[in-house]
Image (cartoon, rainbow, N blue to C red; front, side):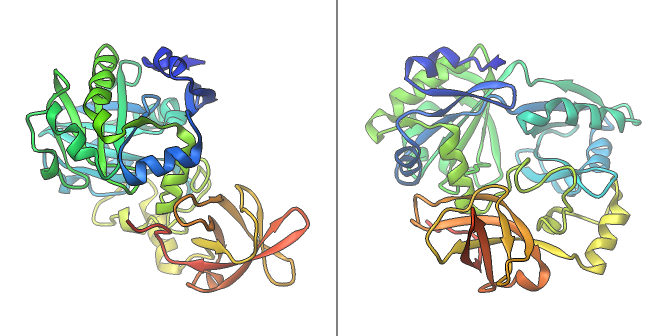
Amino acid sequence: MKNTALNDTHTALGAKMVPFAGFNMPVQYEGVNAEHETVRSTVGVFDVSHMGEFLISGPNALDLIQKVSANDASTLTIGRAQYSYLPNDKGGIVDDLIIYKLKETQYLLVVNASNIEKDWNWISQHNSMQAEMRNLSEDYSLLAIQGPKAVEAMQSLTSVDLSAIKFYHFEVADFAGIENVIISATGYTGSGGFEIYCKNTEVKQIWDKVFEAGAAFGIKPIGLAARDTLRLEMGYCLYGNDINDTTSPIEAGLGWVTKFTKDFINADAIKKSKEDGVKNKLVAFELVDKGIPRHDYPIVDADGNQIGIVTSGTMSPSTKKAIGLGYVPKDKSTVDSEIYVQVRNKQLKAKVVKLPFYKA
């Protein structure tokens, strides 16, 4: 089991540590609901240093990225990021990721922790154009400073205007006394804020200064459990739950980051599935009956026949409703469609709703 550079800090703060994607990670400090509310109302800090970072450089860097990812990275300018995914050659998804354009011929790919080795091997396997690849995952840390007070609380730590960094944009600048830090607005919570990419040797100084600067705003450390409830309220996919190696990207609703203006792995098959239409769709739903939907619970029709599966579910701390994502047949995917979630021996009525579940 690996540790992040801040492992001792989390332990000293009394975090409940659990194994996650091969790392010891803080799942919660004072409790999921309280931490969730901190991010929604003020500002909280996640250590997400388990995430993977690949640096793709050289004159053929873009060619490689265009081949392995579904979105069109040629539209990126320096200082911009995009959400994308790596399609496999069997109709599924290797991983979802964020691509940052650092320089004219240099890109940073940020991938999920559980998929670092798989993604590295997959991209390397398709690097026939000899782009330069470096796996920085072991040397870099990542903090997510999230919440409506993040800009105000952190502004004293940097010379750049944080309020001017738009969603899916970033700056490479000074932060908390460290030079050349990536400050990006690519949050996963729906409450605004920043991600800070720095070296492992720098992260403790940054963490300490972030908590000093944020003290007057009630800043708190936040665990992965609240990160999950926050992202689910926004309807953001979690790899391993809502999408995986066998998931159709079109069924998963990723058509918006699938650009057929270029050639990429399995493009023809994905295009055909989009044109022919899909059998199932990933939908958002709220329970009408009392209960909580959980990952892998069956979704059934009124007669109890299984028609789908819950991929993510929780009791939403912000809306106080039981919410979930799941795959259902296309004819059950329209808003207000009635479906049922089987919880043990009960069929709980639910209705399909529009995302996000939570609006600020």
